[in-house]
Image 1 (spheres, rainbow, N blue to C red):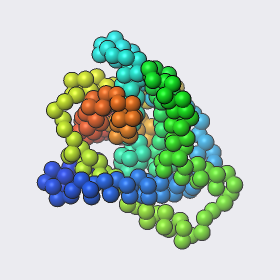
Image 2 (cartoon, one colour; image 1 turned 30 degrees about the vertical axis):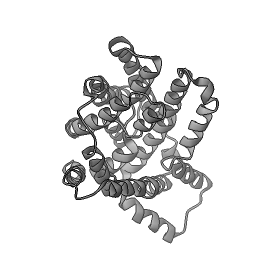
Image 3 (cartoon, one colour; image 1 turned 120 degrees about the vertical axis):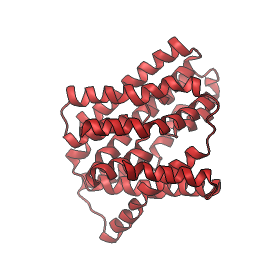
Image 4 (cartoon, rainbow, N blue to C red; image 1 turned 135 degrees about the vertical axis):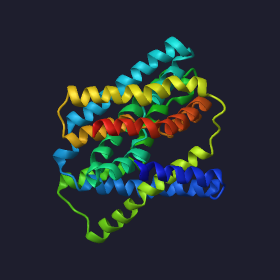
Length: 303
């Protein structure tokens, strides 16, 4: 854990000391998002067997744990925080969307070795596709301006399919299913790019946190943060250690993934719908800061 969060701290310190400017942070984010992470996902999945990739108990467990936490968050928002059904939907997303692609894959790879990248990649697919599909559908259905978003759901789902965190995995699955392998120079290129994903993503995350204002939105953010960091991993542990039978390493990765902070991608939806923007950004920052301790506790408990 020290190397992982040490890289985050380095990024935070560089941002606070203004050693790295905002434009450099954006460039690093773009490189990680469009090159390094897709290469890591592709390399991890392409080296797995079709039986490993299509592990339905694992994928189903990830989806069940995630949607269960989202349902609780929707109820908590409606009961305690108030607001519109749209706001309840976004809070449900904020309490259950883990930063698996941007933080989880580098973290479990450092902690458990390269073999942990495949279950983390598949958890990323399950989370992105199912949770975003559900969240976007609810946001559209509860939008008062629904008529203005006539093709909103279809376009959003198309955007998800085009995501650099999704299509490399789909390509790798297709190659594995067809029994094809890429030439060695191509795989070495993918490995070189993949090696930069961990350090780049973690450093960039620290930069992101260093540029956020923590003054507003904390009071509204804490219920969702508590659900994300405490309830979500507890539900995942109950699912993977009490309901479904999967490889022990995959079970660990699933629970650690559930314990991760809110992914910054959620803020993209908040901005698009002009909905809970300050609260969502504070949720991402606060959950990321607290996850230094909570993820450490979860990983220690798992052994």
